[in-house]
Length: 290
Image (cartoon, rainbow, N blue to C red; front, side, top):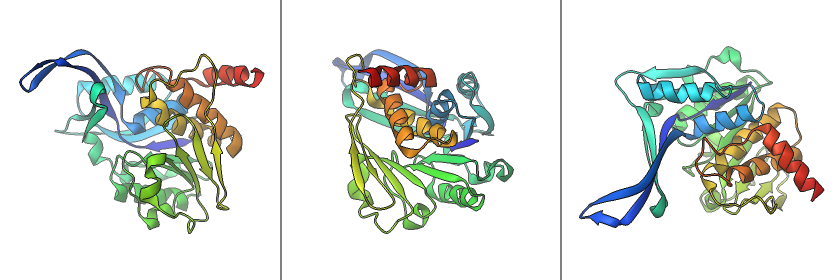
């Protein structure tokens, strides 16, 4: 099973119209409301890529949570590991497009703990995936449980770029934005670690356990325009986890994940842009024929 440990949020996108400002008040030309949180979206991506996927997180005891979990379950995400926090609202992520700014209120997600994970569901066949939106102490504890059971661990170091050396020792695959390179510094001491840096243009850099580094170009097809990057990282990470779970080699996992990210970039939003495995297959076929 793929176990995703992460945030579950309402995602609001506002297209602000600066010309409408009256004092400190301005009006949005339009807005959208959907499922957000890197945990929720990466679980969705893994499930749509064909992996048996369970999400561990926390929501508020409110109607908003019911709506979010229903939309995740519709695509096959197992949500029995999602707990409810009383007297706390489900978290919210608000993106203001013209400013390129996102404001996150974690809400109930901030109370997610490693204790929520039933240890009996983790085995040496498990893939455990998390991100850096949640408390890093809880993430470390979760990875300790996973490694004790022989699971493969993936850390998407986003949106925060900070991770201590002890936690990195528990990580098999580190996926991070290219902007995190300077913060991470020299990773050569972590000889167990495979690192993937995601560039803003859809390409990536692979750093193997041996220390070798290889740039991988973006997937280029005439009908694929890299226009909406907001869901690309989550599409990549969830697909990558599903590929490892299916037993694919690193090279095939990378290509399929890059295709999923590229397809996501052709549509606005996160939840609505994440592709199915069949979409990836069709794009790969067109790419190979081209």
